[in-house]
Image 1 (cartoon, rainbow, N blue to C red):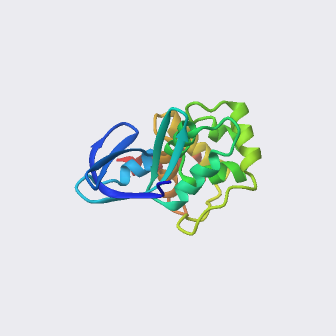
Image 2: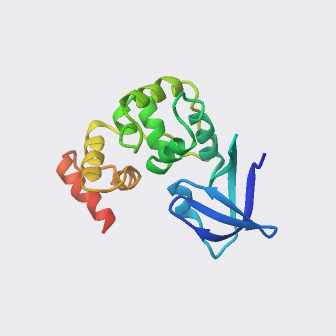
Image 3: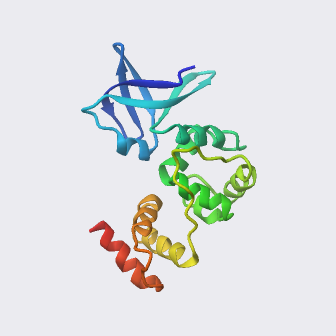
Length: 191
């Protein structure tokens, strides 16, 4: 199997890149977090997982080994295929996913396109003990109810969960406790 790939990016799409190495172009599906880190002018290195099906060979790539590990673990959940696992990693940061599982917050998972309440509950149950994060993952940041409300407000305003979480993490530790004030401060992050 192909465990990694290194080369230059010749083409990018909505959810894939074509990495040229040794004169061969490999189409690699990647989450948005990895797509954001790819610089087409430089050589790219991706950790990969190859999915072999009866009618296809598909390569999925990730910027970190932790993302690849979580992708592989997500595939063990009944009803979660490669496209849905990729959608989860595109919509949620590893910390957001970990926070959702540790705090058993299915509503965070249901924000991912393609995940309903039953699938979210199944993911929570099946990954509670399976999901371990590597050394290159930041420690989990437990959000209190105020920060969760701020994230909900930012998502309602059209920001992605990852963007909302990043904005909330940028708030100073002495930020006022009111949701409105925190939303205003988080919006300044985007300015």
